[in-house]
Length: 163
Image (cartoon, rainbow, N blue to C red):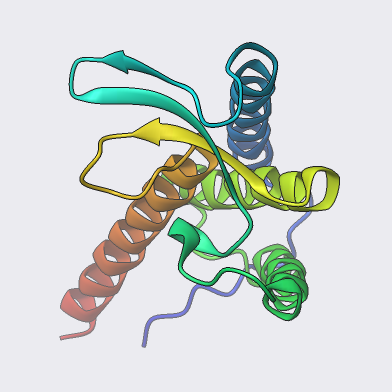
């Protein structure tokens, strides 16, 4: 049987903390630059990519606009529960897993900071065929892909050893 229970974690998951910090810093610096140098609604064309300053008062990709406070509060609660689970459970101890989880945490914190301080999330990466997004969104998606890959790989490995 496959188990990923952390056995008496003695130190913080340093790789996770570093990945989260890098994702958060890149996200917040990029959003600050957009807020300062690109007026709301303006854009700069860079081939198929546009840098366009928009504000997202809704959820991911602007799917739910308007009364998103209950969803926002739920997101914060789920985020802190995730942190507690990560600390206690730990997941696979690999650094790659910690990088994936760190990217998710850093991206989530970046968007939470925007919602609290700005009332909406600053989005600016626009490929025209996809909703406008930011570096926090990239970090979250990349983190989910990395984490799922590691968990799938460990599960398959464990099942193969048990067979």
